[in-house]
Image 1 (cartoon, rainbow, N blue to C red):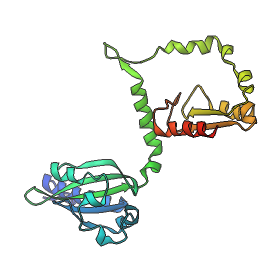
Image 2: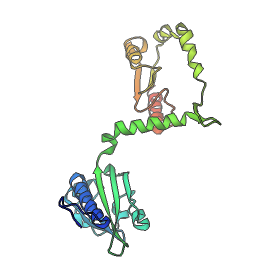
Image 3: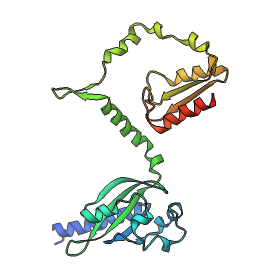
Image 4: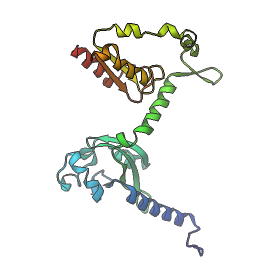
Length: 247
């Protein structure tokens, strides 16, 4: 039933209109779409998706379409959508072509049975385009990792916040420039990008005096990291190993 404004008033018609409008929105905004059948074979890709084929290792469309999706797309989750009948929305997919933000939507026949699934690439090069947002989530995760829950439900740091008072009450005890200036050996400074103890201004001054002035200082800023880099991930360890090997 429709009124003068043309909008339906029954649930089924509203859902059909919403589904049509949402698909048109996705189709217009997406970076590519592909369709798999209930056997998880790729049966269709649109024009935008074809540009990803070379990066995925396929020169011809026929080498991609018609094949099981797990064989042509690394880390696909389309099988899960077909098995559960539930969508996977705003997920990160990483494969040899890059990192993407994707939606995976089950498609049903008139009897409600899953007959296939539609994959929609919403954003490509997510590792670059979403870096600011992902950095915020990583910082929140680090904050959670550094916190503990008290018996009364409150969240508190794992450490004693008063430990920093030594820097407030005895600031001159930590003026180490004379010791730094005396160093005549290679020095590696790993600074967390978000560190509020080793400031960027400090590393600039380090480069202008002591080992820095003598060309023996390497300053590496670790993105998305507070104070201090924990040296528990390959990227940070590789920096240290390369520095030691160069000495």
